[in-house]
Structure formats: structure tokens, C-alpha cells
Length: 203
Image (cartoon, rainbow, N blue to C red):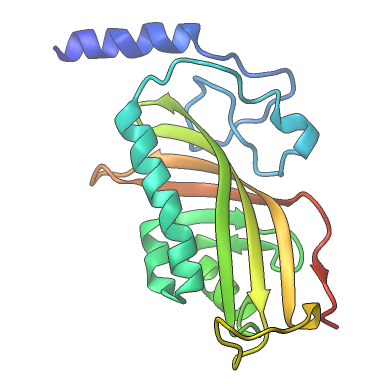
């Protein structure tokens, strides 16, 4: 049974998408499919990394999707310790300016916590997403997001305020995943790429 499963993976990878010319590979990830490098891909480059293909490991894909879905809960709920269930201990996250490069899960937690401290609340919405499992223990994903950041601590659900009390961001998370010994999946590298300017009257 194990032999057949391994053969299935070998055949599947041979038929899977081949890395595009110039694709970079992360040293901790499998080379069986195109890898997201430590420098963010441009929006124009992304299409070369993902193509229609058979979903080889549905369980892995859904586990990754569920783990990714925890991210807005952690950020918006200020449940910072939950990020330890999403990012590997030695993960690296390039959040672009102004947060920049964050090293290790503790650095990611402290960087996000301090970077969002000025906002009384946030809402992160995850949109279009594609996940490719590259090997039994590595995967890549691309997830579109919209993030709203609110300055007004007193506004309730029925309150009306102006754009000067909010900051909006639009972009994508480019993530590399690794399966852990406890069979969970965690992000080992993240690139945050803005797809447009930050929108606000916040000065």
C-alpha cells in the first residue's frame, strides 16, 4: 500500500506543472514544483506559477485552507498566540513596507502586534485562493486579501464615520507551506504583495 502511494505521488509529480524559467526555489521546500522565492513575485509573474492541474492531495489542500482561514481570526481578534498555529517556528515573512522582513514566529507576532497597535479594530477578508501541493510535505499557495483598519474605537455597528477613520489595503499572500511532525501544515515563508495603494485620509 505504501509502495503504491509513493508511486502515485511520483507519477503525479511527473505530470504536474513544471517550474517556469527563472523561478526561484526556497531551500527548505521540495523541488517538485515551482516554489515561491524569498523575494515577492510581481502580480504579473504570478500567472506563470499556477496552472490548471489535478488536485493530488485533497486532505492537504483542505487542511492548508483551514489553517489559512485562522489568520483573520488571529489578527482581527488580536489572538496573537494563534499565529503560532499558522507559522512555523523558524518562518520568515516579508510583509513589505512598512513592516518589512519579520523573522521567526515570535518576530512575526511582535511585528504584527506593534504594526497594528494604532488601530482599534481590523477586518481581513480572504478572497480568491489557489493551493498546490508540491510533495507529501511541501505546498505553495496564493491568497487574495482585503484588509480594513479602523481608528475609531467608539464607533459601533450603527455608527457612521468618514474615510479619515479607516485605512484599506488590497493585495495577496504568497505562502510556502511545510507539513509538520504532528501532521499539521504551517507557513515557512510568506510574501505580502500590495496590489494597489493604501487608501485612506489617515495622516
